[in-house]
Amino acid sequence: MKFLDQAKVYIRSGDGGAGAVSFRREKYIEFGGPDGGDGGRGGDVWAEAVEGLNTLIDYRYRQHFKAKTGMHGMGRDRTGAKGADVTLKVPVGTQIYEEDNETLICDLTEKGQRFLLAKGGNGGFGNAHFKSSTNQAPRRANPGQEGQERTIWLRLKLIADAGLVGLPNAGKSTFLASVTAAKPKIADYPFTTLHPNLGVVRIDTREFVLADIPGLIEGAHEGVGIGDRFLGHVERTNVILHLVSALEEDPAKAYETVRHELEAYGHGLAEKPEIVALSQIDTADAKSITQKAEALKKAAGREPLIFSSVSRDGLEEVLRALMAFIEEKKKSDKPKEPDPRWQS
Image (cartoon, rainbow, N blue to C red; front, side, top):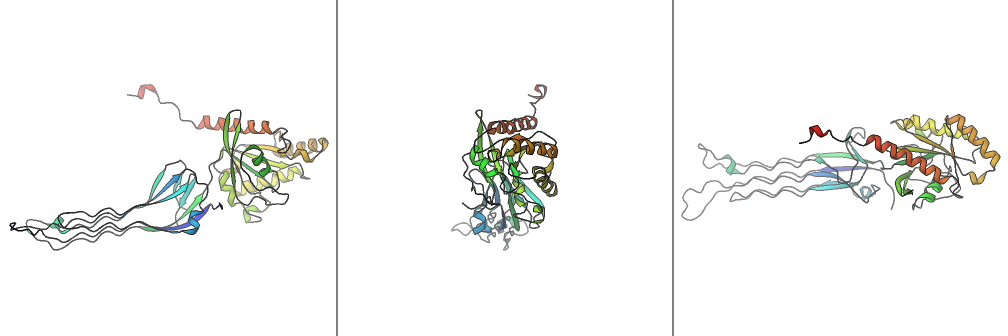
């Protein structure tokens, strides 16, 4: 399945059905009177977050969604049926924006969450509605109200507990493949990863979701390389794992390059908790690893973790460090128990 994290969609709710002009005419009933029913309401357009989706690829092939028009009213005071609704099923973590792609309409962060995007038009009144003491036989009915139409943007930000960042070929995809069942593309050339990947990590009977995004290079915030558009997928994470390869000649510069891109991107990404790690230590000798770890420590201002995804040396320590951050964040976000004095 191809990955798509942004789509432009046109939606239109249904028009209301027209009211009916009708009179009761039955044998032996001298004064039948008006009995035209009201029109039915037009269908609504909803957005719903569902399980099992992690891409907006369905909206590449279909961009127009229109709800049904309400049924017209009928004689014998019969109201028309409501038009059928349309529901846009999107992955959890989808944000919906106005046509300007800046004004946020809603943010669907939980499974089953729904939002009304366009309300259907009301049905028109039938002539029975207009009967009065001075107008016993009204011959007018209202047309249905028009539905709403708008163009919206769907923008997906994956829901993950931890995110991987680093330069291309920092070992992010290898790390993801080693600790999860995900099968990202792995090769020895830059930008092997072209779209975000997700995997579930299990450590000490606990688990969390890990997101890998394409590598960042200097100038990514200006569109260099793949750019920074995929950084939105680590905005929701609780912690960032910043990988610097032991193959880098200057690990401090590599670290600072990615940090600069995170700061230029904004959205609070640079302020997120960060674990720094020197990866691919199976490719260097012990002396070189010690020197590069020391240089990375000076640049990051903290002791880096050291590991190899291939030999798995130090791998569990990295996962436990991530798990500790995630659990601490979840505890701080957990709502407090209500005061029993306020319970009935």
